Image 1 (cartoon, rainbow, N blue to C red):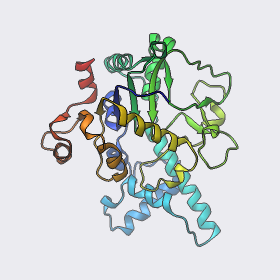
Image 2: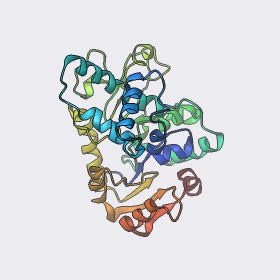
Image 3: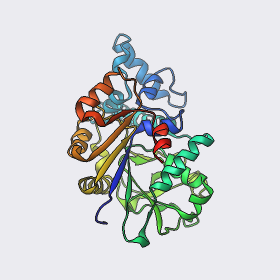
Image 4: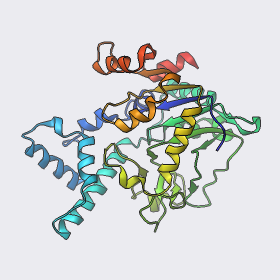
Length: 324
């Protein structure tokens, strides 16, 4: 592990949505439940409709966080049929979230240009003996990776370094590492990471592979569920093995040693106590927090009480277009 990064950009869902408006945030996912759940997920949709009836139509109990926590935390089943039904329900929940967040459309030219400038400003060069910038993401979309691949210059000269070694699923997928890298720690996983065929349940590095739509192996992985931690409070089962433990240990080390920390599109959700404790320990080095909320929005007022005057209400893309 290298000694430190001078600055860290922490990316939240608002960052991705600012560049690709169709990218759903937690609020957008909640709006899909239950009517917007596709027919390919019948068990999950039926579960949500039944839950809505139990709550006398109270949609405030039907958020994706609450549903995911309930489904993923269940351990005891009265019969084998219930256990198998629950396994299908869990599979459909994870596929629904992944399919909702996966976006293949190209960015608008202006957005692509701003994102490319930001990425260039974050490129590190190992031959220079030090690395300046780390991207620390809570997102599992592949916005950064696709932006690098779509840019003619970046795709030829820059390699996305995940901070851990995740090999391609087949050797025909040529992703040679160069000296120039975008260092990207994805703390909740990524939609292009998959469990290796035949691997056990533990998410160890040897059991994870990288699969892109252009790879020869993509057809045999595209129906599988990517490796990511869903927006739920029941996360223990995803922390078995070394993958996420190593990613979070690295993130903790880098945050402790950074000179300045910037948050883009991350709103410090009050429901995630673990993340709040993890991040607020570094409050003295938080340079700014960029979130897109109206001046009178309760979340913006809460953040300013929490973090002071360095909370900026602005769209992340607009902010970066002025800075880079």
